[in-house]
Image (cartoon, rainbow, N blue to C red; front, side, top):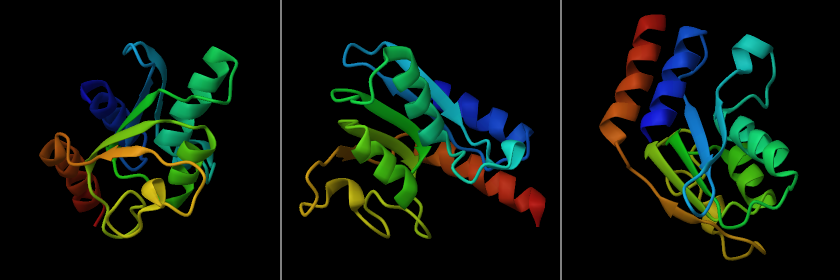
Length: 143
């Protein structure tokens, strides 16, 4: 989570919402990392989770990332939850809950929906205070 928080700080420095993510192999090896780049790149899919998944798939040469763990500073949105399921990421660990758009247990629970053919384990609230503070500081500075 420390590396994801550092990446979130980099996103904020570029004017993007401070969200960072790392994707780890089953043995803990870093496979990919990402941060929000939506504003910087003008890319509506430029969320930290998507960027980390893309980097891991490029590194491994595989779309199927089963057995991996995504560590992200904020609860994934519906788009990112879909990317997690499509890439078969096995576990999602996140910091801040997102009551407005979260899809890992707060507003929606896409990642654990039993109606879907694949589900991911979810662990929320890891270093929640730090992740939440990054977001609150970012938005307070913009108001």
